[in-house]
Amino acid sequence: MNANEIILVNFSGQDKPGVTAALSGILAKYDAIILDIGQAGIHNMLSLGILFQTTNGKSGEIMKDMLFKSYELDIHIVFKAIEDEDYSKWVSMQGKNRYIITLLGKMLSAKQIAAVTELVNEQGLNIDGITRLTGRVHLDEKIRATKASVEFSVRGTPSNKDEMQKKFMEISANLEMDISFQEESMYRRTRRLICFDMDSTLIETEVIDELAMRNGVGEEVKAITESAMRGEIDFAESFEKRVSLLKGLDESVMHEIAQNLPITEGADRLIRVLQKIGFKIAILSGGFSYFGNYLKDKYKLDYVYANELEIENGILTGRHLGDIVDGKRKAELLRLIAQVEKLDIRQTVAVGDGANDLPMISIAGLGIAFHAKPKVKENAKQSISTIGLDGILYFLGYKDSHLDEM
Image (cartoon, rainbow, N blue to C red; front, side, top):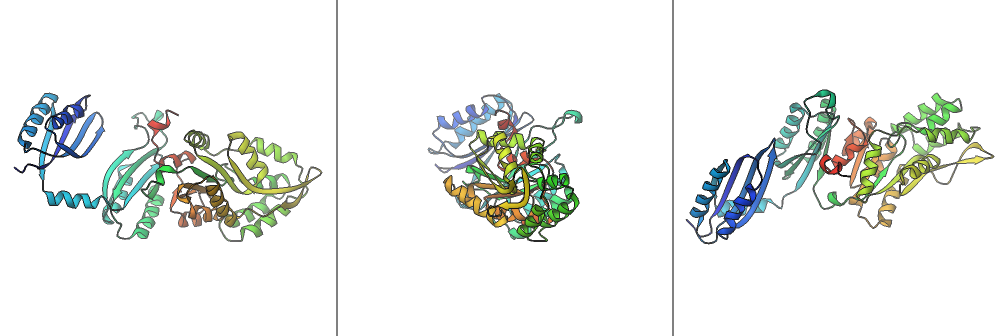
């Protein structure tokens, strides 16, 4: 045998303390070089792989000691010699593109996972690792978790990235799940700013509709709102029309509505976790600053930019003050806040449901269409439609086992 032989050794069996220490200790005894190492466990079963290179021609002694140790530990062991050329080719593959695919839903079935992994294979990508982000599935359906998420680490260059993204969206719609497809990079792991739309995103209502109902023009305003969110009419034009219909409403109604805003499922958990890990949180809303500032105070948020209603003698005039916060303005504000916080735009997250959110969603490092209109989902790279806002935590790569510590 060559003095510097490369050997891959795989161990499998019942997981127990000290296995890795015992096996790596043998390699240390013979001054072997560990080129790669990986370990995974499922249901108390261990799978450990070590790729090493000998330095003194004692591969026989190493394998003999490992065989004895594996017998002692009651684990299975397999050796494979690796040619230098094959190793060099494998190393050269490490520079290839890396992506993270996150599956999210109330439950994840074999059918859903098969559809995703088949597409990965069709696109010529290789799965390097699979990690479950949510807790284990309980057999008792009554106490089973209401969300499930699995993360795939893949490597390679998709044969058609746009087509792959399109098919992911089709799978999401057909199999009632959410799929995030992101490039793996340092920016994905260092995101520190999240910007939310407010109405129908951070809260489960359109405040302007609530105000309109109190003023007896609910149906008229709601129709204009829905048309604007679908992108059928210009947001600024629709905004002017809707605000004009609020003329004569008493200011006290705004306070009453603010006190009873329906917070979106998962928002409390998401905000609490993000604040603990150092995120700056902003509301960028085409709605009204009165309600944005109420949420800012409630959750101790960092920024709020929204539209201000003109009020005279405690009565809404049907006009607004200042420039309208439309889609273009939201994107500008996202860039501005990132600059103030000294962040690269790739370190930002934007979340919204309407057509006026698309500009900020499209420029953010992670843009998410949340329970969004069809047009928005079609144009966003990531979407969440199956669970609440805290689903964003899994798209960011966080595990329940870590989140439970916060």
